Image 1: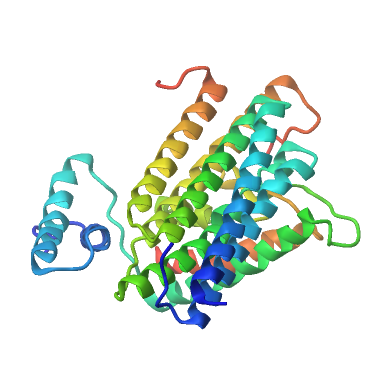
Image 2: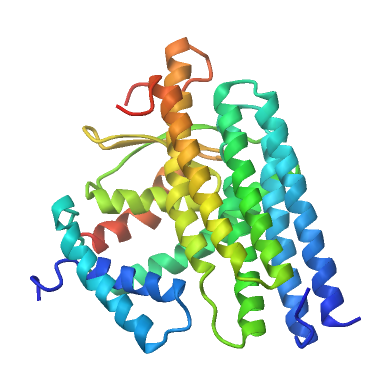
Length: 162
Length: 114
Length: 94
């Protein structure tokens, strides 16, 4: 298992990408896709990619739906700010969030999530202290953002990449 | 221009998806003009890079699938690629701006300490 | 009103909006005031140009524009990263 498929996720992603690019999936294309999916990860061993192990697929699915919902909601929120439809005073500024998540792949996905939800911007991450500096376009309370990021995104990610 | 055999409802859905997506992209670009400081402006293009792009690509996939009468999911690769690259771009830009602002001692610069 | 007319007008409107977005990004790119603002404008310009090409592909119904959009996206990403790194350190390759 581990000798033929050192990186099963990478193999699956490469095969799927090849099939998407070369649609419709004729038998020849499927064969080529499998060859690419099996050989490229073996060659990539020289680069020593980090082994990713996903746990709790149910949490992953729940997180994906949550991020999709947050993405749509925060898109509308930021659009309202830009178009001047948001009434009341708007405060903008930097927020420091101390993170417990240390897994590099988990941090990468957290960065993707925070970028996919407009209104939050990842400025800097200090790997020594684990502190994340964020810029928030529209914040009401100081601790609300910290709690939101830790509860909504960080905890599920720590479960998935435990 | 093709799509003559397309049902009317499909044409309306495609147009609705694409125009809404383009509207979000345009709002993002407008934010580039309207917002006052650099750190506020960095938020603006993400509108086009997330929901705007997603809606346009959904419209494109729906239209091509109906025209070619098979499932065409190729455009999802563009979405995947941009979802992965946008964080890198904006993170580097924000860090660059923070670095420059701190170096010059601007009052806008982000806090240094932790 | 048939589906061809709806698609032609609707997609044309979307293309016009994306071109307007490109014009706004270009304004920020030319206006500055600082180098990072110009890079941000360039990145938005690339993004909206890519989306306009996708919509143009939808109008013509040709699959050829997919490759063009993907390549523009890749070039835009590389350019923005290189420029941002240049601003940070004054050199691209270290």
